[in-house]
Image (cartoon, rainbow, N blue to C red; front, side, top):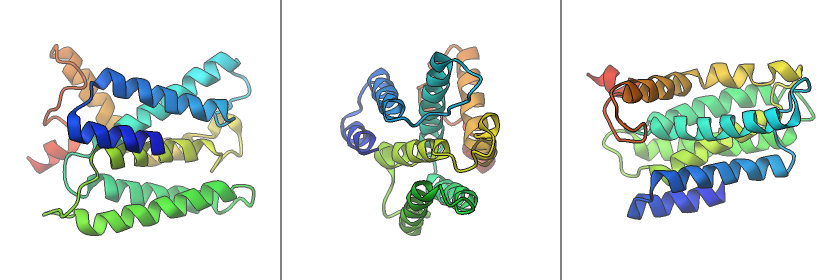
Length: 195
């Protein structure tokens, strides 16, 4: 998470190439796998589990980052998602690390949200938005709802459905228009709702 904050801060200042940022996100996701944090679906071969984990972490990280187009959007989503996952993880005594991380993230999002409403006094930028997305993706894999391995990501997917749908529709629309998916635009759900 600290690596993503540093790279995001540099990107906020100097506009790093999107391919470089994506590579760093994959490396940060790989750090989770190397440290034993993965989706861990028992019937999948290890290589598929690693690929799914990398896709999950990078996908959620970018989905949350792409939502940072209007004031309060990511802070609000981060707070609601962290509190929802916190309610799930607190039911299991073996999920203390997830519970602690989610409580801290929820508090941080609420603190930022206070100053991020329109007109915002502070913004998250890529540093904050990628950190929130990465942390939510990683904590979801710590097993907040790992009662059954195959169903381990159902609750996080449902809770993170808005950024997942938004990112998916934006990527497909931009590809169909012949535009690079990482190009800034006003085609996100929050922009459509504002219109």
